[in-house]
Amino acid sequence: MNIVVPIHRVQDAESLVAAGADELYCGVFTKDEWCDSRGSGCVNHRSEVFSNLNDFSQLRRLVKKAHDLKIPLSLVLNEFYDDDKLCAAMEQVKQAYDCGVDAVIISDIGLLRYVREKGYDVSVHISSCANVFNSHTRAFYKNMGASRIILPRQLTREEIGSICAGGGMEIEVFILNERCFYVDGFCRFQHGNITKRLGAATVLWHFNMWLASAAAVIPRKILQVMHRYVVNHDHACCFPYGIEDGGEPAFRPQKYFNDPRSFLYACGACALRDLKELKVSHVKICGRSMFTERIRNIRFVKDAIALSEQDIPQGEFVAEVRGLAQKYRKYCGDQYCYYR
Image 1 (cartoon, rainbow, N blue to C red):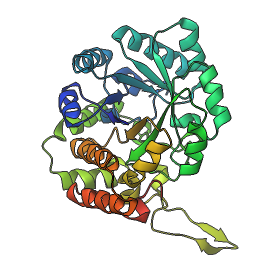
Image 2: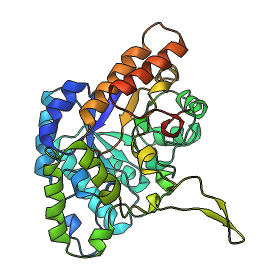
Image 3: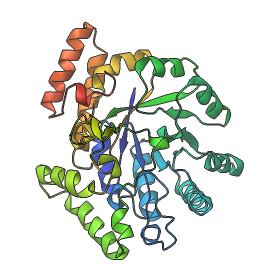
């Protein structure tokens, strides 16, 4: 079972691989895209500047570094596109292919057709944003030439098993961080774009670049507060929603429907044994904007995978994983559990 890890800076590759990363994935969000007056903007599902590489020279260097470390690298293009954005995504595919990426992560069928019609020799991984909820959809994408499916967060173990049973494709699931209640492929909330809409795009670009570089020296607790209350302040999915019946509150389970803590720090490590038995081939650590805890996250998942391979009773395995979570300062409990 391979660990798939996000990266947003070339210089982080060696440390991530040394910690146990088996694959890397990234996005590219250039200054021109950020400042684009037409609003086409980012062509992947992370529109924060500091979650991405910022030009294709960085991508070329990262591909070389990853290949020197004998690690594959994927480019994320996991949005749905109108004509303007589709052209921008096509251009990114072309440049990524020239840079030598191993795979592209895609959700838009039009972009998938473009990749295949152009004959680009890259693997295609179908994003969780493409909403593969059943084996028929898996078969559709297999026929379209995809080699891997990244399953949505909301599937149960049984549903994952029914999709894996079809065979013939790699299956990737989420294992750590960002357990959003909403379905990626249906979500049309704004993520991190309000500052751009307020103007001063170039100034804000440089602020975001400073924030990314400052992350290495800002204390972890301060960064967590900034991520929770500053970075995510304009994420509509974190607003306090509720349901009313005739003007009376009918459903308000917590202060935030997507509670920032359980949203950011979710974990599925206790399910690793089941996922392996279901023939899941890859587990994804989420969080291209969560750059402060990646090394610890990788080590935790790597140790949990090793533990899952030991011949011990299931109850003891779960207890040991929870002990690992405490060791690595991870949250543990029903509200954080991906596959409870």
